[in-house]
Image (cartoon, rainbow, N blue to C red):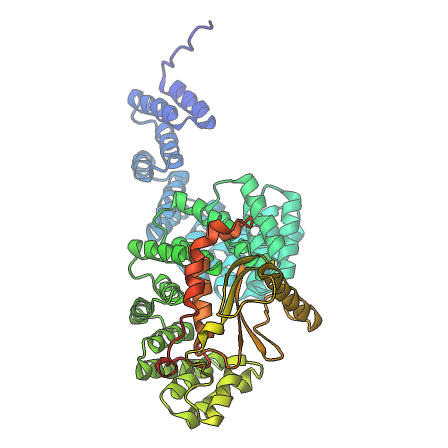
Length: 589
């Protein structure tokens, strides 16, 4: 065994040992060594300065400041001590005091470039960009090729709204130091702020060729690709960040948002969970997690995430508004209205929140209240010069329900002017022109109605039969329905997200409602049962929400989805014709 290294006998020896320990990252042991040096010679300014450095690296800013005070008591003109004290104050966000320290260093040496540079940084952070530029200019007179000062000056120009000047500044600096990855990264930042995403990405790529481990460049490149809607490329960049820094929460967060845009919502949830593991009280991330669940139709899980966000921050406006959406999707209209109203009371004023509240009030039969809110939404959209067909349709439907058919016809025509193929609006226009209070009515003849619950690939989940026996095998019919829909979509160039909603074969009529992994098909003769479309939509949502985990990986085992039968059978319990206030077109949910 080697003999233990003998302890130093002088303050200089302890300082040397502290320096070796500090270089190895052994901060606690370095502090002990420097303290022993100061005990042996309390007037050793070097030891106090090194001790301050150790405390700073440990994040113990108050202790570091005390040590610098000792240095400056011993040596009031120690420019390095004034500089480093200012750096600690800057890190503590005490910007005014930091500037004072940098000025004291400059009183000792007016050509002290680190003090000028740091003073400029503190002024910039304090939103005093013009003064910051003055400090940077003085530094550049002394060191014209100082790349870091050029970078900082460019950031100040951006703050002053002089993005083009900032870009020129960085390009000039790169001309002097073209292998500095920080300059290329800064150039990319400025170009992206100017909306030059393509050029910004090229600058980030240059920075990464010089230093492939420059995490911030990968992150900002990913953000730029995301801004260009190049989500696969953005995902690659965020994963490059995580390959180098697996605990980078910003990368996890942005990866989640990218996954959502790629339609990989379950993976987005995992990303948000990764952030929440470190920041469990981040209400914004809980809200984003709820949004991911909402987009997959898992409304109960979405609701739970919004509730958690609101537990953390009861004034989280977005969580309140989106909780309203989740309640509405689950046909819980009263709590939906309460959530929307709470969001509005806190300052939410987007047309989306107002139309959501209007729809909830409408379903609660508060038609005057619904109309008042939708008028506010329309006024807001008109002011923004962004009218929406669905908002005009919603207003038209309320007037129709109130028996104001001429007004309804006028407003539904506004909706059709914006979207001539709006199916529900076309339907409502016919109703208004005919001045009927209900578009269709089947009366009590619901026993001949047949309803199929079908998996999206054509596999039958449940068939609710009418009084007449079907002439076609259930499974064959469900597969045939799927095949017909696919044929129509392929033949008429439907978009991927579009679906066939109605079919007619002679006297036989088929009403189809899709939701994610499933669809319901109702087959009948004659007139469409009143309110059936709305109730099919609500049944689809309820089935998907309750049985999501089973549906996602369904292997065809009918027993696994047997409880869904209840929702299908209820669809055949048709209301009396004069009891149905919702026959005809419906609000978009």
